[in-house]
Amino acid sequence: MWLILGLVSSLLLGAYDVSKKVSLQDNAVIPVLTMSIIFSSVILLPFVLISVLFPSALAGTAFFTPAVDFQTHLLLIIKAIIVLISWIFGYFGIKHLPITIASPIKATQPVWVVAGGILIFGEKLNLYQSIGVGITLVSFFLISYEGRKEVKSENGSVKWIWFVILATLTGAVSGLYDKYLIGNFNHMTVQTYYTIYQAILMIIVTAVLWYPSRKGSSKFKFRWSILFISLFLVAADFAYFYALTMPDSMISIVSTLRRAGVIVPFMFGVFVLHDKNLKIKSLDLAGVILGMVFMFLGSK
Image (tube, rainbow, N blue to C red; front, side, top):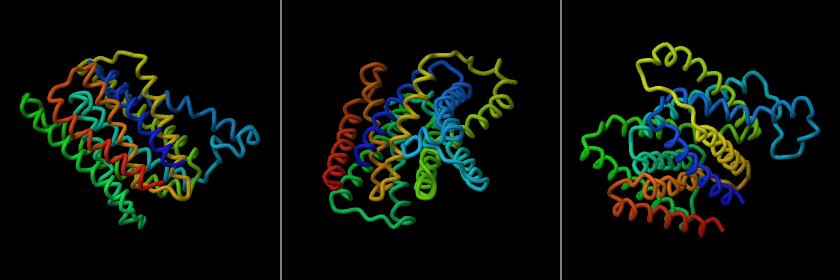
């Protein structure tokens, strides 16, 4: 079951990446990110209120959000800060890079999560799982390599490549932190409260950093795709966190499978945005799919 949830999360995460790319085209990054997080908070806040005011209504369901103490709130604020750092770098990167470059680079995140899952949590992979993870990670690296060559050949700024790499590394830290949080706290508590804290932090960032200098930067244009960022992310995170609550779930497998949703933005880049150098990228992406097959075989 946790493997199916990981696959669902990956597809939703791919749709989330497409929504980000559409929202960020010729648009200001900071307010787009802020609005998407506010929308996510609005979606999740009712579960907190119902759980507090009418606990019997959601008790025993996957949507119940129990209250936590002050120390736990501090841990969730740390989670919010880590994710925001990753997202800010990632949003700037995906705005300035072709989606067939940015999304696959971000998808290399599992290599660090796999290493952390093995070294920190003592997870062990069977033969099929090891082959699947290995093929997938090699494919991710090849896609990233092709992406760097493409940016240089078009005289683009390699700076945005590094932005996505930094987003990937901080995202991996967040993924490992998730394993700790979900092992100790309710999954809805983690998802809901860290999202609300993100909204508060981003409102402050927007008011202090973007709003005073908004006339000298990209203009903000509201698009309905910003709402879809929130919808797809909330659904993807719910499936992801819920999968990690299952006793036999493995962060190394779930995280790798989750990033295989790169297939969705890749196809969007091919058929809608008409990105370049697709033959080599397609071969690399085929490796991602083959890796997924091995992971499924090893998890039966």
